[in-house]
Length: 130
Image (cartoon, rainbow, N blue to C red; front, side, top):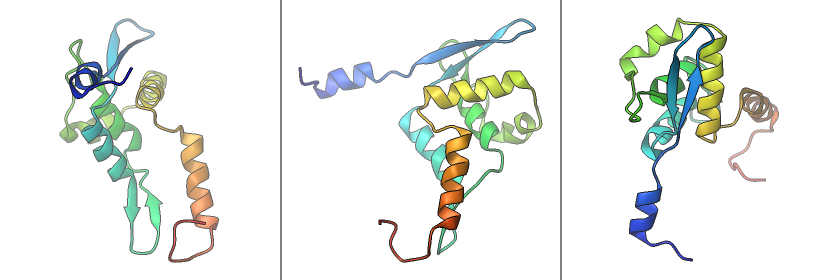
C-alpha cells in the first residue's frame, strides 16, 4: 500500500525509550526529529577546505542534551547545558548515550573511529568518490 502525505506525517512520530538508573529512577530518551539530527550530525564533521574531520568535542553530551526528554518527548536540556552535562561521567550516562545512538540510527564509536582512520589514511584528491 502506498502511503500518502497525511499518513506519513501521522506515523512519523519519534519513539521513546526508558532507561532505568541503577540507583533508582529513570530517564526517557527520544528519537530526534530530522532537523535536530541533521544539526547534531553537522556539528560532528568539520571541513577545513581540504578534508573533513570528526569533531569529538562534547560528542556524547551534544547527543544527550537533544535526546533526554520528559514523558511527552520534550527535551529536558538545551544547548546551554552542554558544558554541565559534558562534565558528568558514569556508566549510566554512557548507557543513555548508547541507547540514544541506537534510537537515532547513529553509528557506534568503533565505526566512527574506523571512518576517521580510513579518511586520514586515504590518498588525497579532489573527489570523494572512488
